[in-house]
Image (cartoon, rainbow, N blue to C red; front, side):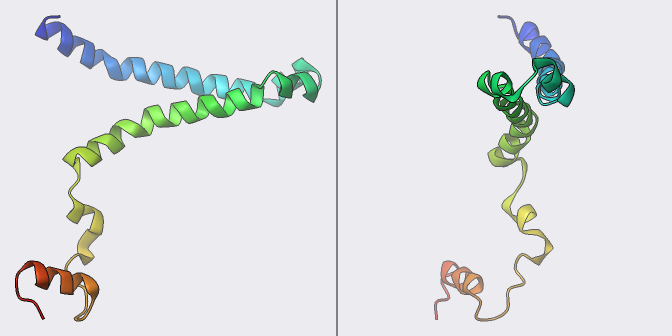
Length: 110
């Protein structure tokens, strides 16, 4: 595959992911809807055929498709650990275990 084809495919990937996520979300709404339940007629076939399970599964897959890329980017170095700790990083009071660990790492010891 040529380089331009790969970059063109990657440029289209978010649109395809959004379409699949939207379709899964709509299927989840449809399967868990009271109107669909009334069309089936009773809970026995509705539950036996797994419509509620499918609705939950579709929603779970859609959630992962939306959230997992951002989480993987953060885990691969997009977010530094100091950003996660916030502005309180390095402000531990004297005698705090984190401050003692920093002193040991610096070679100062006790």
